[in-house]
Length: 288
Image 1 (spheres, helix red, strand yellow):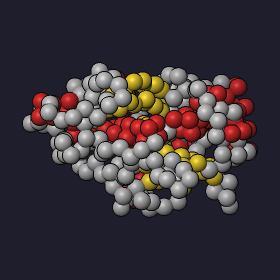
Image 2 (cartoon, one colour):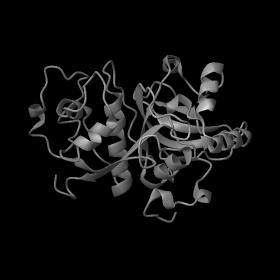
Image 3 (cartoon, helix red, strand yellow):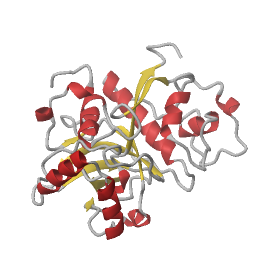
Image 4 (cartoon, one colour):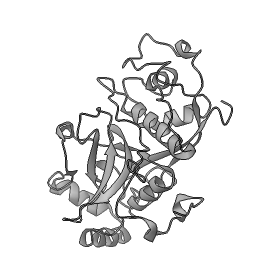
């Protein structure tokens, strides 16, 4: 495939119906599914998984397992096991470095631990650039997400993960029957006339790609509770239902080998609202 300088330069017609970083000519570029345990560290595991994955894509070789423990313990902009945002990890590690799991094993707790414990660990990687997919908060769209994923690798996403999601085993999670009439009417009322036209077109043609952002939907902010990795997409050949392939942080025995599929193009679980991407570099290539 031709390499474009920016993901936005990829022609729409170059986007395949199915794409996954788990299978690029038989090679899996993703990190192994990891388990955050009882610690509220999903934002760190999605970030760590994305950085390792994008390093493998960028340099074309296997990378060491990066340490979520060091990330949580050292980054004062997050709340450790009480939650945080992957974006803040990206901003922090533009001016610091990440280390490997062997030197800083995951403990699932940060209280009582200090960043100085990892002062002797070898620097592995840092972040060169941090960005919102689409250019800013609320500017992500289905199409922009697909282009960024295919261009540079998986993206981190913030979602409103439903409580029943923990019981997921297989298939595509959809919004059918999960949004009541009131919320639908409120959402529709907030759309601009142009967005209403686009939304109507999407629901009559499941093969079309959405270019509706949060701003088009009249949404300036939304409540989110979980961080995930979007590693690809697909379309069900029988129903033509579009879906995202999502890597979770509940271990490889949860869901479909650690993944789940979520309806694509409908902002299901708010997956198309806030997406982030990071450009990592190895410390062996650029001084950390």
